[in-house]
Length: 305
Image (cartoon, rainbow, N blue to C red; front, top):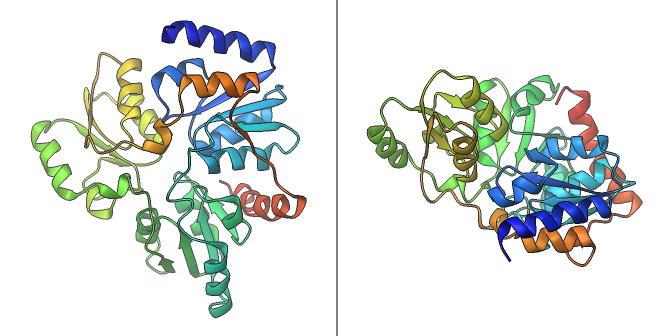
């Protein structure tokens, strides 16, 4: 069976089974082509609220499916591959946060949306990579624990030196691998290229960027820019996506190491089985967990995220 034939089967099956397929931008091109909505993790969850379909299949990682379920509790939400986790989202525990809270009761806990539902239960407000600076700026608290990504936390901290922002030693293992040497090498090779980078990269990488922002922000910048060459400092799927969309422009990966194995573990066969109801894993919560985890997302929305 060819990829095209399997894609056709998925397209037919999702219509028969009233399914909306969500795909994160880091998924393979073949999966993105059969998805109904492609984008950043939180945008996918927001858009899932608007669709009429009663079943959602998330092609991404576990916390993304959890967020979709939190925002659409009346819909069936299935993650296409139950093995698709996120090391960053899972690296701290609620118990660690509660222990910190007990020792520092005057701190607000701010969590990146890239966290488990369990961590969201002990969080005051969530943020996305595009809303983090804005949301933290609107918090009354000057003492803040920012988890789990220390690099995104450093990016936010640079915008508010007057605030006491504590970051734990966590982050994305893929973006975190990038170095200033990677930047020097690629910029020497393509000196005219604009450098667009995700804030999950280390500060020494971000400080050399022409633009720092979410994957959606990076895509939007490339679309609007008159530049003809771009170095992309995030997962390599974005370089492929931009190259397909704008073949008249040139896009280069900051590094060949920018590959998320968890994002790539989902296959077209996984998607087909999830759409047909013979594969994937349904996301469920008890009422107490759903209410507690949803609270920090509602706070983010209230504050403008």
